[in-house]
Length: 369
Image (cartoon, rainbow, N blue to C red):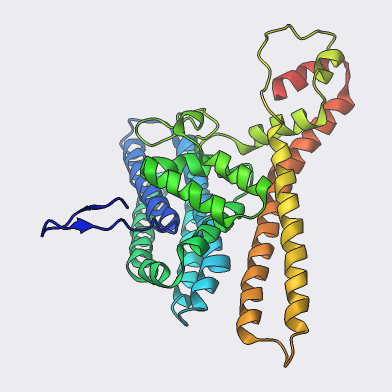
């Protein structure tokens, strides 16, 4: 924070920015803000002044996913790091995460049932569950801010905090992370966003992964967010936009070299016509693969060093290895889930479209893109 004046007129020294605020201040604010907006939207639907049940369900799906990533990063990365410094302060939070994720999953299912059958019983259940979710989640966030955040600020140095933020971002499926950041960034001041980028640059050793993360944290002009702090409907960063569509376009751009589709469809690209700029988005997966390989190689080397240490393995070194193992496992799990749920289905649709062939198949391929 910048220096300022104290009450006695003396200069207040500047304090070092603490990157963990990204997770425990800005992300929490984004979650609370979205819960309030969802409550407002639900009231309009219940009053009969809106017909946006499908959109409300999509927004709850996005919130459910973000909360799941946040909880997983805490359970797999942040809590173990804090437990190394202060024992037995986090187990109850993991139990609460399970309950809250169950409530959000229940809401997604209930909204689908209400969309299909808006009975009085379903509408009442939606109203009650919405209130319960907002109360439970906001209470949990406030508890974390009051009890865990001071411990993290005290015991985890800023550089290590930057690493924890980077690990959280790596736990988010690659098709979603840009939308999550566009959702969070309006709640952080520009100076703090710059400080977060600086912290990540100092904490992430892999240059490709660092470049990818910093690119996601660039200025607002590229992320489609409006002045109200929400992404514009239909923009790539909108909570309601489809990750499947983004992955499908990315999969097609990777599968086809430049101009390949034009040749198949018997047309020539016109100079100056709109073409995607830069490398295909799906090539970002290569950065993840390189980072995972480097992490596994480093983990294996350090594990061998700990195992061969004179006098046997050192308990603190083993604990540190356990934290790293949990992180690598979490990153691989989320990466695999993103491929199974988004990338592979997009490739399957592409393969089916190519197998159909003929003019009709080409028309369908153009619509799919």
